[in-house]
Length: 294
Image (cartoon, rainbow, N blue to C red; front, side, top):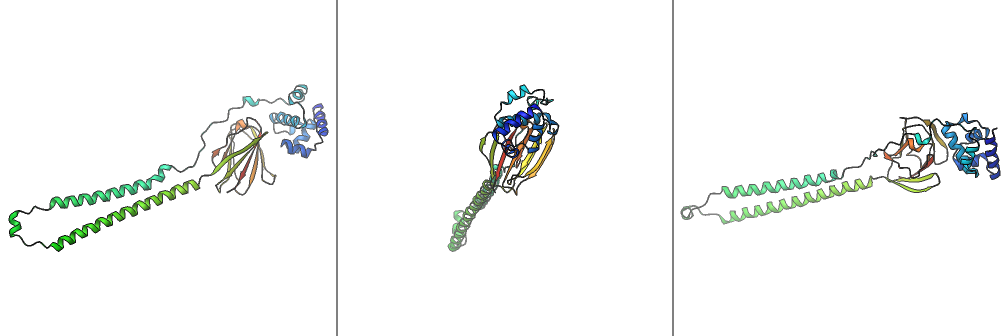
């Protein structure tokens, strides 16, 4: 056991922490805590994580991590690349899958155009009939046949009924167009998922996801990063070191909650239902908890 390991172990025992309790505080697996105390850093997922785990261990047992690093720098592994040298996280606009509001107006526009065309056809038809009727001279009035007044009145009544029918059709078309537009707006509002940041404390941020029956998680990597995922029962369902250009996809629609432990946030992008998650904390290593309800 190294001097660093003895110092950390003594500080842990003074606090009265077991390995299991320290694991719960630091979110570092028990086997790594034991390896740190034994000075066996070869069991770590990498030199960068070895130093990060030692720092978290120091903070949990009340030691100054900077002082410990300075006094035991010969025992600690030196990372090949500092976190500040890691490539910046790729900025991208989330690929949202929202319905266009313009599409909701298309049925209304079509209905208005349809009504306008019908009214124009009726108007032009009546105008042509009026212009096509030849004038009656005074001589024709004296010599021509008698005009049946009842037929004229009947034609006028028929035209009035036709106009009323056209007006009724226009009103029905307007009502149908409005109903269809309202249904489209209701469908659009009901289909919007809600993803909200609830709180951030220490190295943990809690989000809520609701109003959707889909809970898909996608992670894209632009550099090395360790990822651990725990379900609502606290079981470790996934743990792996990823490299640049890796991608991992999960469906957690059957889970009420998950916790994602991100080893390197600058090189890890998390998408929830194709929405990019913005890290609320400026920490390299942090926890992202997502509480899901349909």
